[in-house]
Image (cartoon, rainbow, N blue to C red; front, side, top):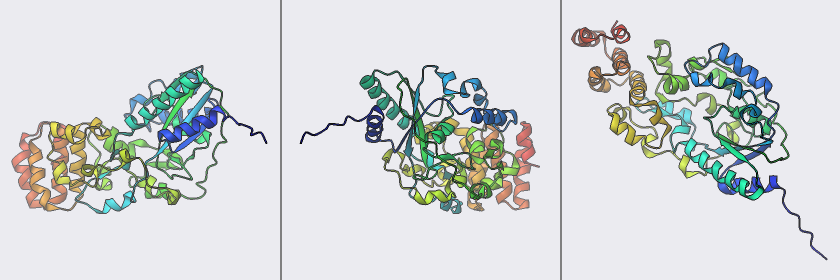
Amino acid sequence: MTKISITPSPKQEIISLAKKIGFDSVRITSPEGIDANADYFKEFLDKSHHGEMKWMENKVDRRKSPLTLWPDVNSIIMLGMNYGPAHNPLQTLEYKNEGNISVYAQGKDYHDVVKKRLKKLAGQIHREYEAEVKVFVDTAPVMEKPLAHKSGMGWQGKHTNLVSREFGSWLFLGSIFTTLHLKEDTPEEDHCGSCSACIDICPTNAFVAPYQLDARRCISYLTIEYKGHIDTSFRKAMGNRIYGCDDCLSICPWNKYATLTEEKLFYPRIELKNPNLETLVVLDDLSFRQVFSGSPIKRIGRDFFIRNVLIAMGNSGNQNFIPLLVSKLGESSPYIRAMAIWALKELCNKIQFMAFRTKYAQDEHDFDVKKEWV
């Protein structure tokens, strides 16, 4: 009997190749059909729920449709990399003397890892099929989560992040736009149902409604994006979270299907896994850049990182931190000095605090710092 050779379709070959390169989830969609998401995004901006993330306002028209970004695109290959943690991040909130860093930032910067893989896959697609390609990961005006939803990779949960039936809340996303015509996959349904766990657990009540986030109240925004004095109404709620917050992701029931990432580059670096606050607060600019080389944490800068660490120290209840806090009162950054004062107020008794106030407050000229002594 003569064997019939069945040549894999371009879609099958691309999926197979993507898996070999290291992507855990691969789906195909078309560039049309996310108008409703674009309208929601405009409403998000109109309500100023993006806070000071002015970059979201830039090129807002280009977010409306992938065709606006690149008119020649025919198919979009959505790709996901699993970064599932070994343990539930909620457990580390109990260790008040240690800093809680968001899971995504504990290993190698995912932008670098995902983009390198995307370029490798895109290059092979270009050579094999003589198709034009463009790669995107997070930083371009691409609505990745709506496209991932439309591709069938998952759905946008009530916490506004992607949820996968296979990987829970732990997927890094990237995309390849191509001139190839590939058969698109069926969109995923929303499986959140009546569950509101992610909304209920939020320490700062950042969700104004299901599927609606006010970033100005979000700890991830406050500790990463916000370059200012964090309002007193949020500081206690921050606990020991010094970079990001995983609460709404961690509590999702769909995480019962999640698995530990097989990508070792996403494994926690030893110095970023529950680091001691006392070792972090003494970092100067050079040591900060050395410790966080290759980490997304480096981008927020030393001063705002120390600001976050000082808030965590104030929430620790550990009076042994007091000498370290006093040493920060001489810092040039008003953000550091202000949070050192606040943390002292939290840890000292009234007599101790008034003594520090008498000694240091008269040297303050910055209005926001001076307010902290009151």
